[in-house]
Length: 107
Image 1: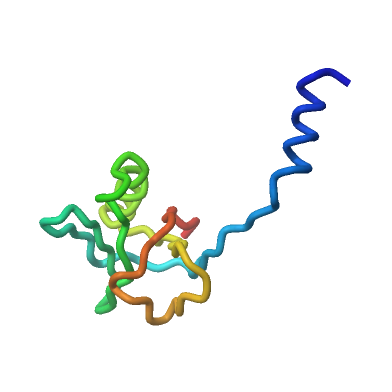
Image 2: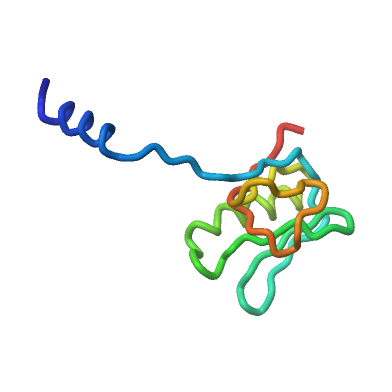
C-alpha cells in the first residue's frame, strides 16, 4: 500500500460522516425573478414568493444559481428548487427561505 492509499484510508476513518440537510421540491415554473438594492436575488411562482439566493454573502457561488433561474424564467422552463434546510413546506415556502441550489427540470 502506498502513502496515498494509507493517507486516504486514515482520512476516511478519522473524518466524521456528515450529511447536509435540504429539501428538494417538485418542478415549478418561475413567474418572478428580481433583486433588491442589497444584492439579494429572489424567485417566485404565480403569486407565491419561493425564496432567495444569497448573492451577498458568496457572490461567486450564487452566480450559477442566478443564471439558471434567469435562463429558466426566460425559456419558460420548470426548475427544481433545493432549499438549504430540511422540512421546508414546498407548497408554501417563505419568501426569505434560503435556496441552496436550483436546476432546470426535464419538463
